Length: 82
Image (cartoon, helix red, strand yellow):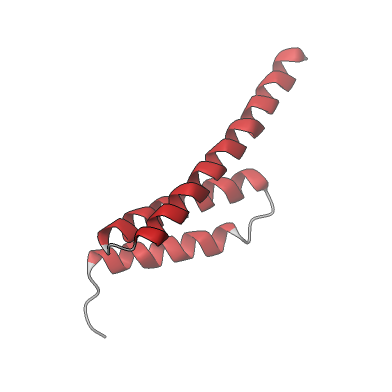
């Protein structure tokens, strides 16, 4: 097997993270792990000049952050109200 360059490793790590995230039962873990995978895919896409890959994963990463913020805000206000 040829030596993989670092950007290929990032691409494979991104794929693994996204695949792992889809196996999560806990939505918070799913969103965090998927966010990490998307972030790695953004780095990968930029490095190989694959702008659709970078752009779509940047968008999905923002969606994950939006939903995580909603979840944490709901938990915070539920705890503060108790």
